[in-house]
Amino acid sequence: STSRRQRQMCIRDRSERNAEFSAPCREQKPQPAFGQNHRRTMKPDIIRQPLLLAIASILVVIAAAMTTGTTISPAPETMISTPLGDLIGLFQERFPRCSRILCGGLLLLTGILCGRLAVRYGLYPVSSTLTIPLYGLVACGILLGQEYLTESVAAFVLLLSTQNFFACFRNGYAIGAVFRASFFLGLLPLLYAPLLPLPLLVLAAAFCFRRTLREVFVSLCSVVLPFLAVCYIAWGQGANPLDTPAGLWHSFVSDSGYRIFANTPPLVPALLGIVLFIVLCAIFFGLISFRTVSIKARGMLTYTILLFTVTGCLIAVPSVTPGLLAVAAVPAALLMPLTFIRIQRTVGTLLYLILYITCIVNILQ
Picture (spheres, one colour):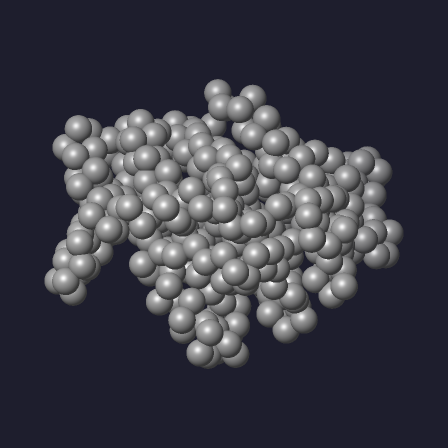
C-alpha cells in the first residue's frame, strides 16, 4: 500500500511539473484563428506570381493584339528596305494569317525566354517571373507596327544575342558564346533599318563581360560576318557589292514619316510615359545597389542599361517605326522588375494592374 501511494504521489508531481512547463509554452505560441494563415498566404504578390499566371497574362495581351489590334502605318508610300526585312515582309504580305500566328508565337517565346534569362542569371534579388508579362505589355500592348513579323523576329534575334553575351561571363575563354552573340547582333541591321548602330555594342559588351583581346577580335569578325555574307550573295547575283552598304545607310537616314505623337491613339503617350518612368526608376535602383550585387550581375545590368539607352535613343532616327518598341521591350522588360521589387507591394500591384488594364483598353479601342 505504501509503494502504491508513493507511485501515485510521483505521478502527480510529474503531471504538475509538466503542466507548469507546458503552460507558458502555450501562452508564448498561441494557435492562430481559423483562416488566418490562409488570408496571410493569399496576399497578392506580382513579384512571385506563378509561372502559369505569367504565361496566361502575356497570352491575353498577345491574343488581343493579334486578333483585334490595329497596325499603324504612318506613311504607306515610304518603303524602308533591308535585305532580310524585305523577304520577311514579302512572306507577311502573301500569308497574313500565318504571319500573325508566327508573330504571336515569337512574342510568346521571346517573353518566356526573357523571364528564363532573368531567373537563370540572377538579375534580381528575388526570383521573379514578372519579366514575361511585362515584355508582352511593352512589345505589343502599346503600338503594333505594320511590319510586325519583321519586328518580332528582330526582337527575338536581339534576345538571342543578349542571352549569349550573358553566357560568356565566366572564367576562361568563351569563344563560342561570343561568336554567336556578335553574329546575332550583326544580323539586326539586315532585319530592321533603324538598328544600324547597334553592332557597335560589341565593344561595350567586351568591357562589361571582361573578355580578352582574342575574344574581342572574334567578336569583331563575327559581327561583320552577316554583312559580308549579304555582300557576297549580291555579288554572286551580278550586283555591285558596294550597293549593300549604300542601301543600308540610305534606309537608315530615310524618313519613314512616323511621328510618335501624331496619328496615334490617345492612350499611347500615357503608356509610354508610365513605361519610361518604371524603367528610369529601375535604372536608379540598379545603380544604387551595384555594391551589393555580384560582379556577374553588375556586368549584366550594365550591359542591359546600355542596350536600353541605345535602343531608346534610336527613336530620333528618321527611319524609326512603331516596331522599335518590340525591340526596346527586351532590355525594358529585363529592367522593369527592379522597380516592382524595390517599391511597396501594394503600390507595385496597383501600378502593374493600371499598366496591364490600360494596355488592354488601348488594344481594344
